[in-house]
Length: 357
Image (cartoon, rainbow, N blue to C red; front, side, top):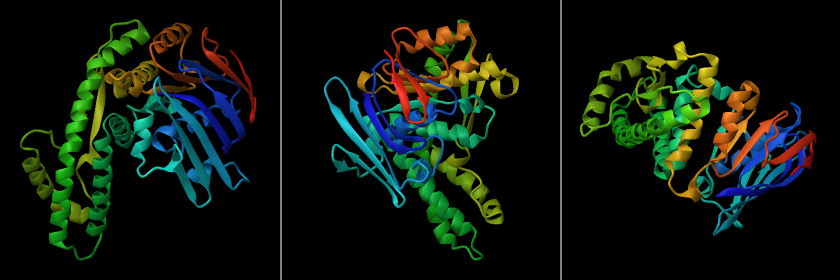
């Protein structure tokens, strides 16, 4: 699947924009502040029904307006779908082919979109929450059941933490919630272990293509309990050991919500020993790797790169552009990038553009 066209109204700084896209490389060029990132934010929204910049949909409505909308056509060789997202001060409505969707996971089945933005360079140095979010989003796009497991787990975690904050704790309820969380934790850890194994299988090839060097990278997953045939028994023991700590701290101390991973580059932790350039290249390779885990061409992700080229030297830019030609559909934002055979859009100022070749 790819994004064939999009129309946005009163979205961020754009009163009205409409585009037809190539199913290969599309580049948005313009000075800083003209709204290039806002445009790709609208494209990204089509996949997960959420922004990569804010958790508050109200921020997406242009200042002074009451409503905003995204209309898009998603197409493949054999089928196409129309997606409409309408934002109001009361909330949002998502309609696919004229019917409201029942679950947000319906969108991820229609189109898979991966984004790399400037802050992703810090993924290995940042908080564990950011790395868990990367895993959760990536696995959810590849395996729909995983999203359900995570959603259920988070609800139980919230309920357990609320219980722990009470002056008098219902021990029976605490035990029940703990058992339910453990039941969900097994599949979550299993999915994470397998996904990281799959990523490690393609990571080095991508890094070598981007750098021209034989570098060795590997993700080390740090589960709270490794998944095996005795997972539930070991998890129960771990939760029992931390029970008094949880009651004292009034919060759940361990579980899949506390997990993390580290990235090794040439057998050293990149967060401590990697240069800024190495962190950037490896983070980019990590973000691009899910593309190579999907055999079905129509389900491979659309790639969005926001302001990546400005931080790369000319040689690395050329290698990246050459590598990106392997992908189905790519969107790139830049202040001045021109690529042969790419579809170029030059944003001149708020709400106006020149459609190039």
